[in-house]
Length: 145
Image 1 (tube, rainbow, N blue to C red):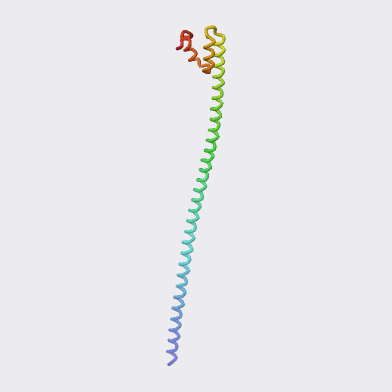
Image 2 (cartoon, rainbow, N blue to C red):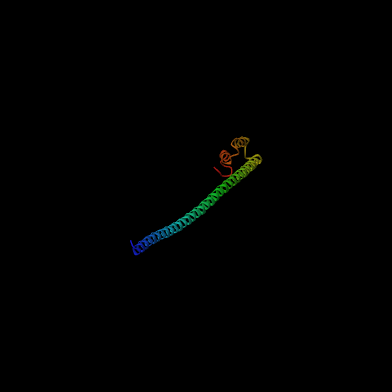
């Protein structure tokens, strides 16, 4: 083999090595670009997940606040109901006191009225001084029947 053949063989080997190097280089570059794109997509997806988590956290806090308000409203309603019960009891007590006072006045009026007999007074006392029943005993008195 002559020198020129050896030169062409060496040039061929160098060209093959250069092509192999170029293929490896481009493959790595391509892989690096692909990895960068994957990292960017993963980063974007992670940001979306964080935003969704933040939105869900905000919604959870809003629901907790609404639940706390509903609980406070329920407690306030219980307090209001207790106040109304106390007010009703007080009014009932006031009404009973007024009823006793009215009955006492009626009894006193019957005691000093010469037209009301002792039997009528006793029947009135037995009935709790019910003026309608007492008046039934004497239809001529006060015009009530």
